[in-house]
Length: 126
Image (cartoon, rainbow, N blue to C red):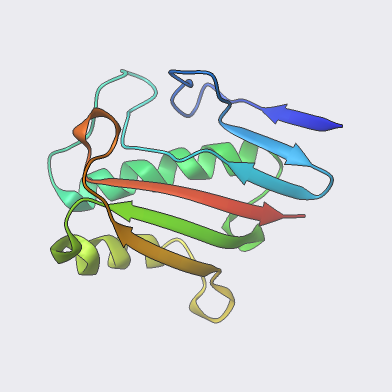
């Protein structure tokens, strides 16, 4: 059986998907973008603010599943402009212990939902 994970501390899904699904001891998250869950507004002031909102949304989803960033084993980062990689990486990295950081890939894409600049998904394990 799979368990659907939902929290109102992260943006509600805007389509036929869930914030995360827990199967056994493995959590699969949907990609998070920089929507402020309290206001529903996009946080696009700077790439740093946008990335911080994405990571805070992801933190809320992990917490709803009883996990932290220490449980994350794999991440995928989608970015619109590879020139933003350094700034995104700095914010992203501040949420992890470098010695136990997860595996990751980062890819530049042509477009993301709501024309945001960054989207991140994760896989975590208990």
